Image (tube, rainbow, N blue to C red; front, side):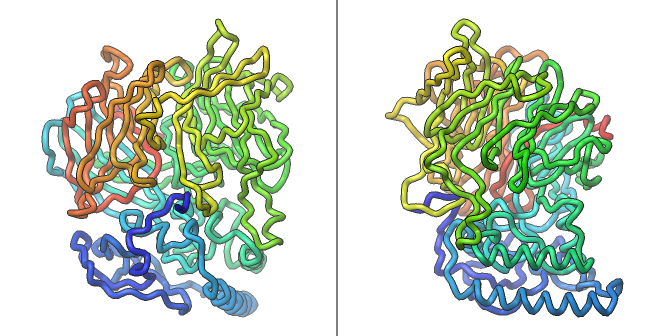
Amino acid sequence: MACSYILTPNPTKLNLSFAPSDLDAPSPSSSVSFTNTKPRRRKLSANSVSDTPNLLNFPNYPSPNPIIPEKDTSRWNPLQRAASAALDFAETALLRRERSKPLPKTVDPRHQISGNYAPVPEKSVKSSLSVDGKIPDCIDGVYLRNGANPLFEPVSGHHLFDGDGMVHAVKITNGDASYSCRFTETERLVQEKQLGSPIFPKAIGELHGHSGIARLMLFYARGLFGLLNHKNGTGVANAGLVYFHDRLLAMSEDDLPYQVRVTDNGDLETIGRFDFDGQLSSAMIAHPKIDPVTKELFALSYDVVKKPYLKYFKFSPEGEKSPDVEIPLASPTMMHDFAITENFVVIPDQQVVFKLSDMFLGKSPVKYDGEKISRFGILPRNAKDASEMVWVESPETFCFHLWNAWESPETDEVVVIGSCMTPADSIFNECDEQLNSVLSEIRLNLKTGKSKRRTIIPGSVQMNLEAGMVNRNLLGRKTRYAYLAIAEPWPKVSGFAKVDLSTGEVKNHFYGGKKYGGEPFFLPRGLESDGEDDGYIMSFVHDEESWESELHIVNAVTLELKATVKLPSRVPYGFHGTFVNSADMLNQA
């Protein structure tokens, strides 16, 4: 079995050709083909998209008023036009060569973005949505969830993580709900719209082997001739969302954050790339942490090309950045997440690394380093340099996400809660081994430098748990409960589990039938909350039989479904979300 974020509903019937269809009317009989023609330009409108369940579908938008214009060459001089034509010719030859070889499922768009992983067009605000049940009175604000939603039909390899960022928003006021979804207008997306094609290389799907090197050369050659600008970021802002310093920030770890504003009626607009008033000059990890007491934001930045490969920094509640703390690493390492405690940051240095030189050997630059020993670094939150870092080895430990961490002074330990994934590189590289994501407690002893790891859930009820959270009001403190997506059958999410981290007791909430969801978001009931689990779980859920999407609101104590908001269009499976209350919305910068 391939171990990756893939879907294989019926790969022999997937294609890269598209026909217009009504947004909410699937057409399972659509014809299919995978041609080797020059990539076509896609034109957008908000009213139509091929929404066939088992096809790779891209919006095919009719004139007039396309959102994506034809390539504008009027500003180019004769040399630039000639360079563009030559580079386009070279890219066509590269694509022809690439398409002569089969793609692994980890980067085959027919697997990576099929079914409800396929993209959708933007939707303006639709108000007064139908609600089954009653939305709790304490929910007043907007639930937002990020995800990968490629604007253009892939012309080559494509990984799920490569798609352009799109934020889906449900605004709730006095029990009334509205919905909208918008692309985050990254520098990459804006330029590709102007150029009419997907010019920027896809970090995972295309940058591997000799063709990846060739694609990079073409990309930088276009920059050299002034055909595009790669100096203002190449990221997709499709992973994380955080509300900090009166701003909603959309993030992916390959760029600076992007500020997105929620309008009064629940629509979304991109303000732009946000560098904290010139203080931030490097990419920021997609999972920064906000301390619920001090209101500081903690973050990492990693570089895959040059040293320092890793930096740590934080921001005051007023948005003032601390100096960078350079953390010495022997090689650039994948760090999608980290953790905080009351006094420390906990940084994983694991076995998935970047080795760009492997591209010259025709291999992927993302690899599992079996000779490296996984470890965690514990650094005081106010450290000025890395001299106070304590490294504790934790062999064969790879956690793509860490759910929480806290200090245990009586044992001189830092306790880390995460889902340990094996094989470690299975998200990026195809393999035959069954993927497992096991909820684990990892205890790091600061005195002895040794670690212990235990499986939290009994083997008799073991399941893949990925994507979720604890009560964020207790982040960095000891928590009893975690709410985690049940990624069964992998990678689909059939429900979520409420796990007692001390006893291993599990209570499951399944969506039922052919309904699948994503990250369960825990929203505390408010200042009057009675206990750690006094709140509600929110999650987008999609029915693969009716091809309709909903927002589910579940009581976190009883796991009883309290309300279902019927959404006006399909919401693809996505990544991470947040909630912005109505008071914070009024104070947006």
